[in-house]
Every structure is written in structure tokens, then in C-alpha cells.
Image (cartoon, rainbow over all chains, first blue to last red; front, side, top):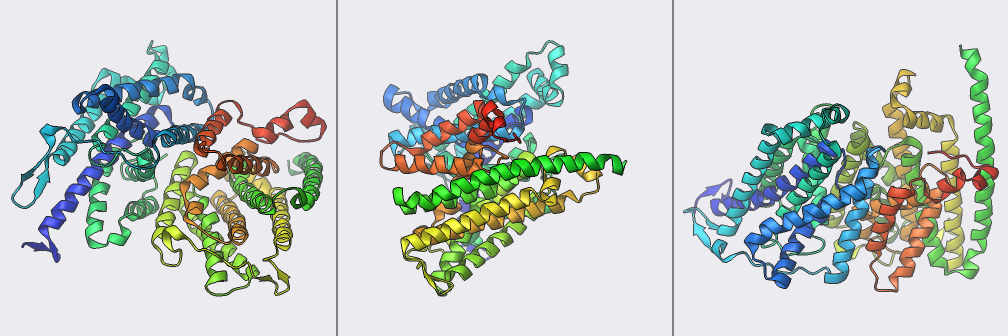
Length: 295
Length: 332
């Protein structure tokens, strides 16, 4: 058996894959957070709850309506996105003129309320959600067995991340978004409906979180607490990447996922904390984050 | 110029100390009520109120008077609880030594976390404290002395100064009450000291404080360590009251809870956090017997507070006509 640093290649590759999959979720979630933070200046503490909501919506669509995975992958983000739009329009939008910390506190309360509700109805135990038939099984890559669904997660999240990045950097909508981040009053005076733009941004971020939730449902179990366990790590990813930086969120997400995976091989005790350790080091050396502009 | 600004400053201080005296009187009244409270209420419950009241007041030292939102105060609360519980149970230390260790440990953790976090402001500061606190959570989850999910259980309360037997509930109660009053006095003294004034000036306008020549980061760090140490005092006492230290106390949900207490009672007021803590703890105690989940209520109360009730109970009272008659000043 081939060995690297005394560790079998198969094990190493397995952890690389686990890291890439976790990294996919980190990237998708921190991307949504970065988009929302960039324009709304709100740290969306409810992001984990929206991710959980996405997974639960897919599960409920299946058990109640018989909707399959592929349709849920589109429907669930739309439903959660609409939910996000309603929240933004009715409540969050009242807080923009205040200290940004109130946005964080409000979404924290929202997260508690959503998670509490689901925990009340579904308990804390996980419920399985089967991967679609077309993506079950595994392919032999020669050096390791790759479960098809996991490969799919990595590829589709890369595509979505790239798509959102292109949307923001290359389209007119994205140009408005970026302009509105710089100077909302000026953009409004050009006839752009900035409040609508803000609502759409929050809906987009919520939808991205829900999309990640549906993707995650077959990998992890669907559980009311799945979001709150993840959200703090994603915050650390955002801080390392540089808050508000789209590219930073994506790159750091995958990178930290892989680092975490490898840590599990070489020093398992630190695998839970390695991301926070990296965050601390980065903050001491570069307070604005790897890709952030200094504030 | 200096001569001209002098009287204004002096007047300012007089107004503050007058209002401060009234607030102190009110606190004394509450203290008297608390002396008699265990006759009517379950003593452990009142002790829990006091511990969390002190926790919230210590937290507000940072949020209310310095304008720094820490999302990692559970580290100092739970960390101190672990230190005290371990010292008292495993090393056989006396309760006062155990509490001292808890406070010192919390201050040390506060120094490290504060030194890293004060490099950034606002939301960034909150996120960094949150992430560092999560690091400490995983440390507590894996370290041997904390006993992971089980926590440190059946911690003996011991003999205070070798004289007072704290296993007696009423003795323990008056000990906790004394610490609570002492803690609040420290907060009050601190807030109304020149140091506290500088902190408020940083909260109001950091750039101006810098241009006045204050080394703002040092003051912020000082406030952070002070807040951490007092939070540690609350955590240490909590460990002795319930005779255990568990992971719950170091979770980020605990950091969120103390923010809610402060927000609900009134950010930047002296009595607010204590009132808020009382409400939250009472609510939790009441709901614990029903099967309705506390998190839903907590979350909804949070949202309502942020949307329509940002001054909190005490803040709203101070701003009202009645409050002004009573001599309150609205602060935040």
C-alpha cells in the first residue's frame, strides 16, 4: 500500500474528500453570509437556521408532497428565499438605520425561534433523507472509492459558487449590488430601487443557505440543530476570508474544509479547533482577513 | 480654555453622582428585599438570580459602558466555574481560594481574548470573541479535568475562611448575596470613576477619545479584563451554588443568553441587567416544568426587544416621566 508521511494514501484521499465536502458547505454558507453582509451590513446569525430550514423543507416536500430530490433542490431554496424576503421586508429592514449590532442580535433571536420551533415538533434526533437513485453507489478512481453523491456535492457547489461570483462581478444586477454597497443614496437617485435590491439580496443569501441544506440532507441527517453546529465555524471562515469578500468566502471555505480534513488524520484532537486556531493566527497577522480590505 | 471647561466638567460630575446616589439607594432597597427573599422563595432559585444578575452586570460593563459587544462571555463564566470546581473538589482548596482562582483564571482568559479582539471594532469584534469562545468550548469538551459531557459534579461547598459552613443553605445564601452586592458596588464604582468616564467617551466617539490623547486600546482592554474577572466571579459562585460545572456554561448559547438579559433589562443602565437576568431566569424556571421549549420564547423576546424595545425595561422607565421624577438619567 502506498504511504505518505506514514499514512496510507487511501486514508489521506478519503479525508481530502471529507474536507472538500465540508468545505463545499462552508463555502456555500459563507458566500451567502458575505453577500448579505456586503450589502445589508448584517451578520446573518440566522444563516444556520435557514440552512436547516432548507434541509427540512426538502424532507417535508418528500414525506408530505412526494416531491423528489431534484425538484426539492430547486423548490426548497425558492421557498426559503421567499421566507427570507418576508423577514427582511417586515422586520430586518427597520434596523438598517441603527447600529449594525442590532441586525446581528435580531437574526440571533430569529435563529433561536426557528430552531426552537423545529426542535419542539421534531425532537433533537436526526432523520434520514435518501440520496437520489441516480447518484447512489460509488466509482473506483483507482486509488480510492468515490461515492457518487459526494462527488456531486463538490462539483455542484463549485458551480454554484462560480455562478454567484459571476452574477455579482459580471452582470448588471451585480453592478447595482456593488454600487449600492458603496453608496446607496447615489444609486437610489439613479432610479434603482435600493430597498428591493436589499430584499432580493437577503432572499438570495437565504436561498443559498437552503440550497446547501438540501445538498447536505443526504450526507448528514436532517436535524433541527444541524445549523447551529455549523454556523460558528462558518463565521470563523468568513473572518479568515475577510468579511464581505465574495472570493475570500469561497476560497477560504474550501481551504479550511481541507485543512480540517487533514488535521483529522495527523492530529485528531485538534480537528474541532483547527479552524479557530487558524482564525486567531490570521487575525494577529492580518486583522482584515486574507482577502479583506482594511476597515 | 482649560479654565473655561472646568466648571462644566464639575457640574457634569455632580449631576452624575446625584443620580448615582439615587440609584445606589434603590439598589440598597433591593438588597434589603433580597435579605428577606429566601423566607418567601426557594433559596437556590434566588441564588441563581443573583449569580446571573452579577453575570449580566459584569457583561454590561463592556457593552453598556464601553460599547463593545462580546459574544464570548460564556468562556469567562463557564471557565471560572470549571477552575473553581476543580480546585475545590480535586485539590481540596477552600471556597475563597477556589473563587479567587476562578476570578484570576477568567481575568487571564479575558486578557488573551481581549488582546486579540480589540484589534477590530463593532461586528468584527463580536465575531472574533464568538470564535475564540468556541475554541475554548472545544478545549473544555476534550480536556481531561472538565470530564467532557459529564462535567465536574458534586463539588463540595466547604468552609468559608474555615469558619462558615457553606453546606448550610442559608449561610451559602448570605455569602452569595454579599458577593452580589460587592460585585455591583465594584461595577458602580468603576462606571463612575475617571476610568469609566473615559470608557464612555470611547463609546460615544472613539476618534475623539484618540485625538484627546487616550490610548484607547489599553482602556478597552482594561474594561474587557475587568468585565471578564467579574463574570468569572459570577461563574465561580454559580459552581458552588449548584455544586457542579458543566459544558452548558461555556456554550455560545450562554453568551447569547447574557446579551438577552442585558438587552431586556436595559443596556447601559446599572440596574437593567440585573432586572433582565431576573426575568430570564424566572421565565426559564417557570417554563422548565412545562414542555414548551424555552428557546422559542427566548428567540421571540429577543426579536421583540430589538425591534421595538431597544432601551429595555429600566431604560424605558428612566426615559418615562415617572423615571425622570425619580431622578433616573437615560443613558444609552
